[in-house]
Length: 292
Ligand SMILES: Nc1nc2c(c(=O)[nH]1)N[C@@H](CN(C=O)c1ccc(C(=O)N[C@@H](CCC(=O)O)C(=O)O)cc1)CN2
View 1 (tube, rainbow, N blue to C red):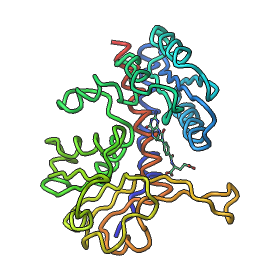
View 2: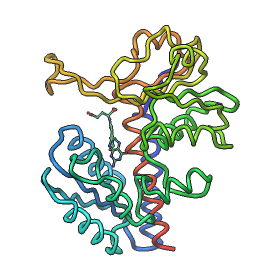
View 3: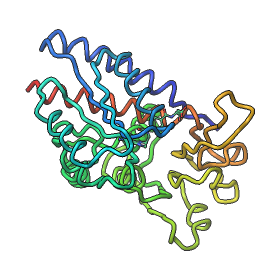
View 4: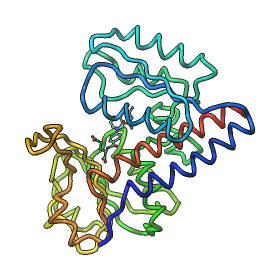
């Protein structure tokens, strides 16, 4: 069994981005610039956005954080997006999810200029991804693809089971793994809360992507010997032994599943870190596109 380290791969991706950013600055005089919108004060979202801002600085990007109170109006958030769309010094825009219940999420996403849609959530980005055209790929599935590639894992012809059909992870992951690339070229089964015989389906899988948000859901008796296990879960579970008061738990029962796996991602230190690395990759691409 080999652990797929998000820490190692994300560092490698960031080293490459740092070098490319220096080149881009030397050639164009332009510094890639990411704008992040954070609404409310959800603890996990605060952590992820803070990490995005820090990582931008690490690779030589500019970043701007725009904060709204949790009761901000749809109109106020939309006005901020329009302003960022019109700001030629900003290359990438993201709105941290989830949003407060009173905000229409799709309407917000639809408003982002697709050329600055570094989260890859805009319908144009999703459409291009499905068609196999150049596009911004949602950061978590993109990060997983970068990780599989880094470790030289051959996925061609393999049966991949994706558990979870969210627009930001499961659904795009199923599309990417089905594309005629390597990683890719998988036969994909996309499972969700209404799937029958989930255990039997998982047991058939050469690759399992667990992205359902239930800590420890994937047990050892649900996976076959030698399977590749990718854990997308990042649930905060109360843990008084931690300074923070919580532990981060994946969707995989790691200790029980790891001995059966050929490769497995840890939580923390796996897919989460790749999400940030992929976002940086998309932001540099957006800056390069703007300079053309
Ligand atoms: N606008 C977006 N919102 C959300 C996305 C996204 O891609 N775009 N994905 C997730 C959250 N997410 C990024 O925003 C994210 C999740 C996890 C991590 C990460 O680094 N995890 C670490 C642990 C960090 C910690 O909690 O201490 C790890 O797994 O090692 C980064 C980004 C939902 N929202």
